[in-house]
Image (tube, rainbow, N blue to C red; front, top):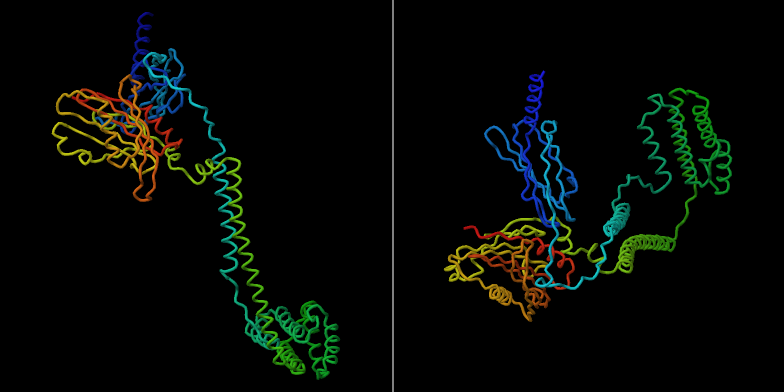
Amino acid sequence: MKIKFYILLLLFTTTLFAQKRVETSIDTTKNKIGAQFNLTLRTVVDTTETVVFPTATTFGRMEVIRNYVVDTVKKDNRYELIKKYGLAQFDSGKYTVPSLKVFINQKPYFTDSLSVEVANVQVDTLQQKMYEIKPIIGAESASSGIWKWLLIILALVGIGFLVYYLIKKYQKKKVEKEVYKTPIEKATSLLNTLEKKELWQKGEVKAYYSELTDIARNYIEEAIEIPAMESTTSELIVALRNASQKKKMAVSQETLENLERVLKQADLVKFAKSKPLDFEIAEDKKKIEKAILTLDNAIPEEVVEEDDILNEAQRQKLIKEKLRKKRNARIGIAIASVIGLTIGVFTFLVFTKGFDFVKDNIIGHPTKDLVEGEWVLSEYGNPSVRVETPKVLKRMDAKKTLPKEAFAVIKDMQLFSYGSILDNFYISVSTLQYKEQVEIDLDKGLEGSVQVLEAQGAQNMILKQEDFNTKEGITGKKGYGSFSLINPIKKESTKLYFEILIFGQEGGVQQIVILHEEGDQYANQISERILNSVELKKVAQ
């Protein structure tokens, strides 16, 4: 029985060790409030295996402030996957990073739990300089983005309405219609078109008679001015007789009787399903043509005097001018509506939110975009400076910034920057190594940096100095203040604010320079975040 128990225990233990496929480590078990713990998970898998690491925003009571990309290292025919997390806690005390699940081929494997301690930051009120409490700054309204999109949508709707109106007016996609000078010309043309359709030859007798009689009725209505389309056959013939007497038209009784026969024949075809013979259909068409021609010849001609022609031309010109003015007025109203709507919304936001709000959230503010953009944490130079910036700093040619004689004592100098002295925001990080051990005077180094700014055009400089301590306790010098600069393009004077950090190590100097327009609240936020993120490393021997 004991042997079975030991065998079972051995198998269980072997299973546990087999499950141990994820290694867990942390860079430190004790840190200050808000400082980052770096948790690392490692696993080695085949090239065909899939691995899913935890994606939670909290591990126990530890907050995940950074979720790094998985690093992959190829080892022979296998991969080593390294996943790192940045954890933090903002209350002092002892905490546990719990066991986490890592899925390998959809099978869970558990990491080791770790204990960490978060310590309070000790404040030395005797040596550490104290500052006045900053005034409360109102938080940006969560609806600021809504107002921005609302204005954009309203503007797009207005522009869309205007474009639609112009398209309807000026992009004429009309079906070309024939314009006839006289009713007889129209009737003759329509009769020829009807004949070409060959409706009755195709068996569509009803459709043929319907069009044939409509042509005759339309002609009578337009030429003789009686309601032919609305009248019955009997009513039409009576009205036609009365009109011929009133207008003194010489219309024979035979013409009216022929017209009446064809109209009644059409009524029988349409309503009684009568089927006339082919020769009867042809005769009916000839009767209609002859009746229309006879009626047209019987209409007395109206003598139009030259004055009447001139008056009609003037009247048509006036009508066209009125239509043009109405069209232009509608276009003007549409444009004015869009402009008025835009101005109205803009004015409303200025009065309710303030001009600064409109300028920053609608018109746009370069440094505000930097604040809200995706920041980058990286190391620069040697001895390296680890700093968080709104944009990646680009490597510059350091040799151009110093005279050739300086490199007689300088072993290496590296320079990284973003922007320029004329931009909305400028930052540079530079590191320097001497060939031999030298005594570094930070005050003189700060003065040298100020002289470089003056060489670039800085005027009326105000400089203040104080000690600066990083989170790791490394002490350096901070210079800050303001100066005036003439923009060579705009020929205008701009007031700039600057901050310079300089640190000295054995054989090395690290420096950070920040410049921006004075009074720019977003630039101040950027500067504060950058300075709070500064970490330094020692010279690599």
